[in-house]
Image (cartoon, helix red, strand yellow):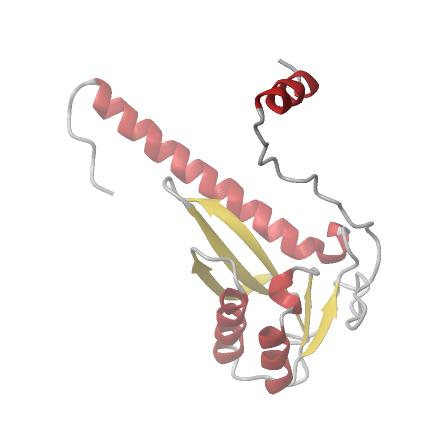
Length: 185
């Protein structure tokens, strides 16, 4: 049954649909109004703690989604801070930034580059950056190439997570077919 026929029949029966309105996407390629793109794809950094990148990704845990926020030092291309939570709010990104700031010895003059997600544009997160004297830079809207080292790390984490879960499920399936107890992990 098509959408129009269903709508007509519902109208005849006096029923009202609770269908969500279509999502209006914003045009990509624009910089944030208050926070420009200072990094401008200059990923070759000469010293540690010059530029940090951040991103948030979701990971399926089997029962629900978990959200992982990671802070990456562009010099070493290694994570310096991370946090995981079941709610994707600004506290998640703040915990990851706090971990990076503490483990790196409270450095000054760092630039933090991220996408234009609500985690990074929130008042609480921007106040934390101001308190730590970290300059904020944001990618253009809808442009993943402006934060490509971070996107590459997230892709690697997802592929590793996929193979860990797949091998665990394969081992579990092998033992349950034989009506045996699965191994403890």
